[in-house]
Length: 121
Image (cartoon, rainbow, N blue to C red; front, top):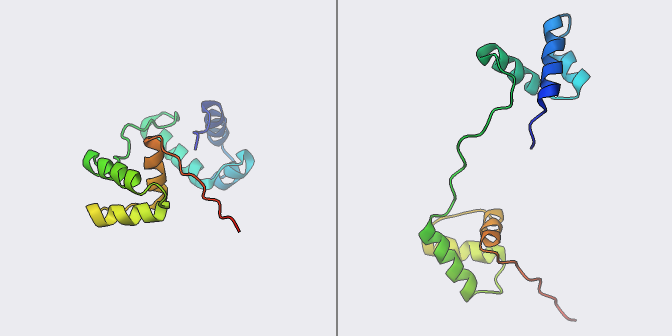
């Protein structure tokens, strides 16, 4: 989700500092959540800044390079397997259990797309 603009943050802060309005009313007036108002005001009190926080650390990948290579081998050997089947085989071979959506993201990273199987009747 994209961060709220600095302009909106400044308008919220200015309105709050003028007084006479609760945090709930602020949230309602500016169509944001109460928790956003609370976090914004807390950040302003603690740091003096209302700028969006910058994420410094990325979430580490679920699979290391060895496990990633095993996933490649699984896909090459079972090119008609479903995401769920690939996930199960990966868990058997590596002991690492990942979600189906993670398998899908890993395949996208490998630039492999799943083909749709048409069933003829």
